[in-house]
Length: 368
Image (cartoon, rainbow, N blue to C red):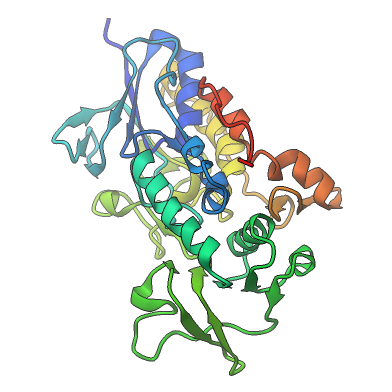
């Protein structure tokens, strides 16, 4: 008997959660296919520690080899999706993958140090080794952008390399670590059009002078750009699916792409929520998308589908300040280092994600 094929493009938090949930729910009632250009799951949450702690980066890549346990016909295809039609996905390796239901969870492009554009563990380790060596050698480091990534990067650097001169927009615990902050100011792009950093790069591992709107000139040995600018990975569907003005795939509250009932999209690449947070994608959005796909498979187009309710900004968030500090915002109040260390700062969810993907975590802690 022929069973339906469900294809998921993008195997990060949302994508692999959808696949594991459907694998457990449908078992052999559907064949599942993951299309992912990276060779393994990449734990973006742990990216910043990878550029300061020796030997850490390799553990942030977790194999998909045990992703499926209930259907031997389900598989992972390592390739990049080039385009999508109403019947199939065209891949960079020349394959055409037919589907009955399609889920797009390709996320957004986040370069180092907050993410990576690398597709193999080996290349990523090389990249982080170069950055870490530059940080270790530098006396002064400038971080442009005082959002979550900028604050967490400053915390990681100041924790691993106490005594370094780090400059950033403020957060109280950072100042206690000796991080210099610049209030009510922003960095001006270079007059030659090359961007804030040379060649519009996300980081620069050479001496450079930054100029602010207040007229200050900040000289540093290396610089990182962490302004939070993200580009959704949606170019490959631009000619087929509706995108908003920013490039996000437009979806209904059910997770279905507008005008395409058999195609779903969630996570950072979609308009399902304005807050682009991993925990929303895998803990709230993914279960709804899975439930709706199962309903359509079992009941048909007359099925009543679940709807996603957008999160309230500022209701919950965790910011780490190295492995020993941080701030946690909840609906019940704001909590300091003790809770943040317990939830995130110490382990960065490495143990949990290795366990979910049924892989052994070989990381034992910082090297002495």
